[in-house]
Length: 387
Image (cartoon, rainbow, N blue to C red; front, side, top):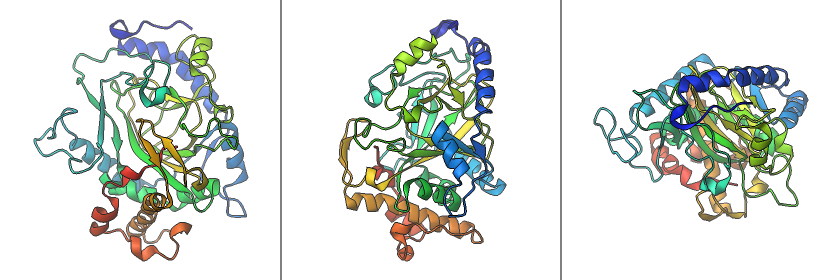
């Protein structure tokens, strides 16, 4: 496959044109995988066997129609509100209207910036070098901004709608079915891929801790839910190599060489519509291309892990910081699930309430309120787990 030149020689239009055949072939392959449909549970209350089989075989499953129209509208509105309060530049403290930017009182940044259509991490030593292949970086339009917001962090403290989605009873039941009733959270963020601007995420496999462990398995590094507020298409969506989550740590550079470019052979897009939620194994080889398409993607993402993979573990996170996950830290981070369940119940009182077993009987201590926002939710992501 011919590779168009990168850098200033590659326009966004040329990139989009050059991707057409690859995108359409990937779309056709994705629709043959048999890994999409509504959330279903079997007679035993566990995740339906058809879904389990497809998720294990492919590595991701598209749950269709999870988020109802009312909730989807609230998620979209919250996302726009947060973006309107973004600083005007990475080091600025005010938004476009001169107001104090959102997140100045949080300990971790809320907004991640990058140059439009760039690949800020591929081919670098960042994140422990787990993104070894540089993606093509087309030239954006002349009127494009120098920097864009590519990612939002700390969803549960910046968007009440995301906190409520986090407490979704069916999604939490799926997490329980996969990791057991004492499952744990990982981290959260929102991926932003605006048309003509959205950055690449170079091919990688999530997880750093268990690749060489004697008890490694296909779920050792957990999974992510990726909610879709708009369409996830071949041009703006996440791509993955089906089945790669079962093959251990793969040589991504070799895969790119064998494919003749960064367009990995055999990869497929995770196709989804507004209100769908993608269940994705974090060990999949996955990534996304610069968004030279005409479609916008906004994907709030939240991950879950098995407790046995977290409790008592010490490791070095992607930023090179040593950390240990003792029982106190595990309990403190897991309480966000209990808070989210109550926040959702208050907003949707007629919906069945999920019971998170580690906090069963302690619900009164984790009611959602403005006081809880300050005492439990603010800076909750300082306790994230990175396995």
